[in-house]
Image (cartoon, rainbow, N blue to C red):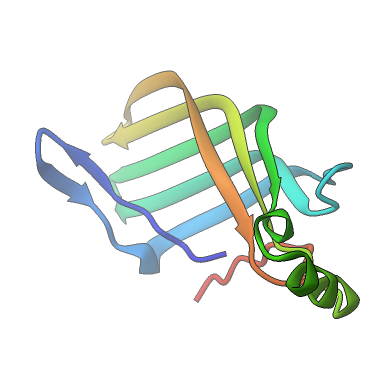
Length: 132
C-alpha cells in the first residue's frame, strides 16, 4: 500500500509529508467475496512537530462496490489470468471518516461519512504497508 497523505484547508496545504506518516491497521479480515484482506479500521497519523499531530481514521461500515477486474477484460485473457492465479479487484468502502487535529494539547475533531477504495492489481490478497 502506498502512503499518500495530504491535508489542505481553503486552498492551503497544511501537511503532506508522506515520509512521516504512520499507518495502523485494525480489525483486519479476509473479505468473503473478493478473498482480499481489508481493514475495518485504518488509521493514518502524522506527527508534524512535537506539539502538532494530524490523524485520519477510516471506520468501515460496509462495502458498496466489489468488482473483479477480470470481469472487464476479454474472456480468453480473463481465463489465462485466472490460470496464472491473478485476481485483481477493486472494493469501494462506505464508512465514517474522522480527522483529529491536536495542536499544543487542543484537539479538534471533524467527523463525516465518506468512502474510500482499495485496489489489488495482481494475485496478492494482502495489502502491505511500507513504513520507510
